[in-house]
Length: 246
Ligand SMILES: Nc1ncnc2c1ncn2[C@@H]1O[C@H](COP(=O)(O)OP(=O)(O)OP(=O)(O)O)[C@@H](O)[C@H]1O
Ligand SMILES: [Mg+2]
Image (cartoon, rainbow, N blue to C red; front, side):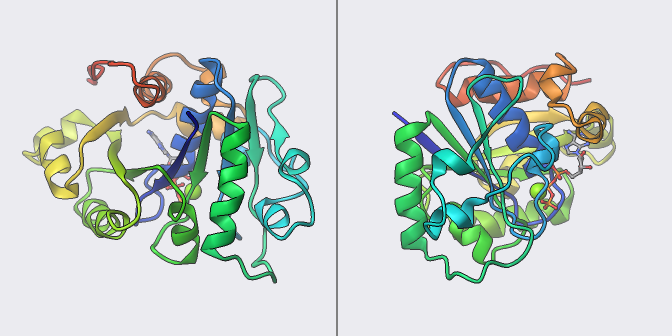
């Protein structure tokens, strides 16, 4: 059965786009048909994270308004089989996008892909609401900063009205820093009020890969790349233990 997953956070810059690109490429590498949708109107970046900079000409609003079809607008990854990107427009669209329209579009996307990942914008505005209105699952990405965790908590209270399954991913983990702060991953889970789907370490390769225009999984096997693979496997229902992070 196909699954639509919204990647959210509340606070900006916590790692939603990197996680969408990383987990999306891993799901495709595991043999699934994957559509990654950039829902960040005006500030799209998912193309960079997937190493598909400016390949897409049409965006999700073109599909929603009927100007084109999903088949024409979704661009296949040049290297990773089964992975497609549907990008976001660079400017606010003139058409009104309704939650109803988004849900109908998602139903069509789910009939063609095993996983539809939606990279939500920061905040709780329209882009967030559209990203989550038809999602089966939502991932809340947070760092261990108190401000990110507080925003995660706010996001969870919005999400719990619409999405059935919610998960937490703790990103940019630095165990040494956690020890200095006398805090733990359990505290982060308690603060967000969510079960843990995965922990991604602080890893400079994430930025290097995006800057080089390469998906991380084609560059690295350990660190964040391994964490994304573990998260992808857990989403498929596999039991994968948390990897040790030093
Ligand atoms: N695990 C990580 N280790 C190191 N750097 C990371 C990690 N995850 C993300 N980053 C870096 O953090 C920055 C923000 O990441 P990203 O764009 O994925 O966040 P975002 O939540 O999508 O941001 P926005 O809210 O603006 O959409 C980028 O420079 C990215 O390279
Ligand atoms: Mg982003």
